[in-house]
Length: 291
Length: 289
Image 1 (tube, rainbow over the protein chains, first blue to last red):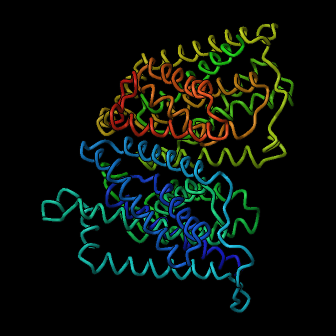
Image 2: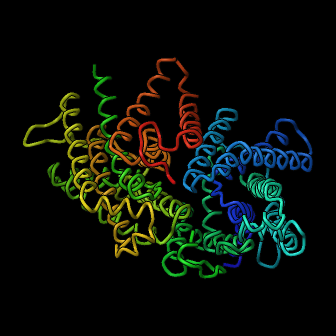
Image 3: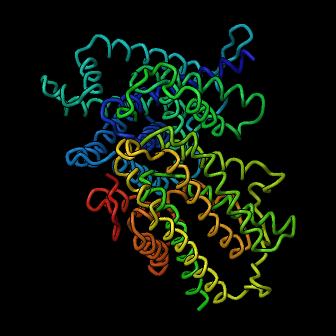
């Protein structure tokens, strides 16, 4: 039982990372970034290419993965979303474009690297035991990195000027720009940061269980669900939603089998929609503001 | 010649499917990504009834249509509590759950092994076995489905649905029960989507869950968006274009190993370009704004 809770927490920490990125992008720019999945997979494959094909040391490979993901994230925003934002296209148009981008990336990666699962590290992971809990090295990294980044992100939002501007823009973009916020610059930064979060999450998963080109979509769907059950409009709530999802998934998998994992995610979503639509930490809003 | 019949049958099925999705997306303004779930449920329910309970074709078809319609209505109850992007997410969730059920409930659906040997339909005692006969059946079914949709949409119901799409709060202030309209649009669309599902099952005589996954939902949405939403021409044109596209790739002698990925890349690019340059699709009326 405790073991499963610990596994669930590690899993939840990764979901939380991806969800923080997704939520940051959504709350600031209102882009439902399905192509987050493409960035997620791209980061992991960049890590794979650097680590296994080019045989770089791990820190350099991680840096390379981050760099690729951040650049790709900014490029997607620049080439696809910004022109749509300029003509103030509807949310549905942006979402469909994002879906298109995701399909293109997923299949380009599949063409380049093949559809099969790639393993990044051979052999058995080193494990550590704490009382009755046994965790692998990678799992500990997942939990620690997840907590550290959530903490750093909290400080960034609360105390840095840029973080405060992010919150201002998410509240009212036009007002923020009237008051002198450089909305465009913040937007670029938001996409860079969100993509970095996605890549960190995917690299931690890739080191643990490997990657294939098609894992991105379900990871980002889980992240989006985490955002909803955490509560929209709150930058840190996705982390709570992510951990909650990780824990429940892990418990249900322990009770039944892993094949219902995604169904559990969406079952939880439906429960929240029926009984607590605003999520764990979301406030109630006026009817015309509801997203 | 059978090849041509096959393509025409597929065009009919996808045109019907996209036409039913059009009711939700084009007229209701609700972007939905779970249409393959309704399509697949129709296929599975009718196949199981025909093979396990030995029901006749028409009774199985009618049961599938009613059951899927009710299911779609039930799904819409939680889903329409969300708007915009998160509505899409909820429909995606339903798609994922249906796929998991079809794939994992091995006792009933045989899971990944699929159901082989679905019988060809028999209409008024005549078994429809040849390709041309099936094409006629597919065309008749498509016309009937479009007829039902036309009756719905040309009635006050259809106009109110479009009013809800354009401005929900205004429609509500005129005393229209916005959510009831949305739910019923969803139910009708699901029920009609079951028809091509049943036809697909009896036509290919083998079904498995992979024909009804998320990719299929995305494909149907592509048909609608590329053809154009909000009128009757768009989905038909979309079905013709998107069913013929892979066949063109086949004639260009692109190796099978990359053809599938290449096709997906073309669909994705088409979505991005359409949204940038022509959000109403090739011949559509509604531009998602």
